[in-house]
Length: 230
Image 1 (cartoon, rainbow, N blue to C red):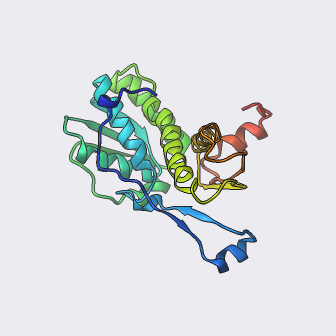
Image 2: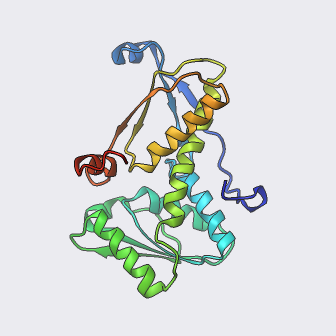
């Protein structure tokens, strides 16, 4: 919704497969049918490539050529891939806690600089990247403004694809499972389901189950702090 069609970049991402699991696997789960969306077919093996394509579309639209971001691994790998596809000059600074360093062994473009923060958590790396953005890059954009808003849109695109692929096979979906989501992925899934119900691809709201790592669990953190409305 933030773009006109002519403003969207095309990095060659194609629709990923939706596969039905075996009867033995379904019996193990206790379900009649189960489908997996293979986002591993994307260039760097994660849904982050969808995010990157949208982010660079925004970078081009708003003439952003400097960017700072914290990363646990997948986001940075996808950003590096996007930089190889982007035809304009672009520089990126990555802030990484030493615990996440092993996940940053991908090939980095010349204009990508990694800053190692000894002993830092991911949240601390995010805060340092914010400080760097406003004090070193001196760009008044909110850090993650591109990343965060497009993370839920990329998740929504993934689920809309899956639900569209399913519409000829199923009328009712009981359960949607999403692993390792920082929160915005859940919002994306929910929005896709809302759209699918409106388009009559499915006819009822399924339950959503999410698995989150301890270092990226904002929904649990909000619930535990009493912010249950969120």
